[in-house]
Image 1 (cartoon, rainbow, N blue to C red):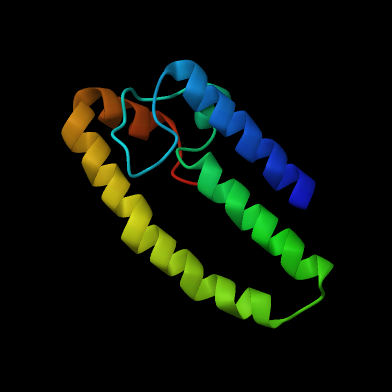
Image 2 (cartoon, helix red, strand yellow):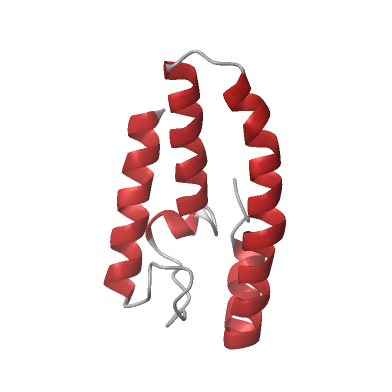
Length: 107
């Protein structure tokens, strides 16, 4: 799981850099990226982090990692993903709406 998550993260980052947009979510988005892993998920980098986290939790064989993951995912969804979606819709309008209608938020 860790290797899968790292692979998705590298693929997603390279795709964003190639598209000419900022990888850092605190920097402005320059374009809607719809190639690479963004063809399958609007949030492949967050999915990759979750996959790495679960892989590490399984690797160290701990139950509390799963318990902590639940509120972590809620915070990420409510505090980060939904806010980013509002920003992208405001910045790119119809272009983002079309992308959102074609590609799932997560899986």
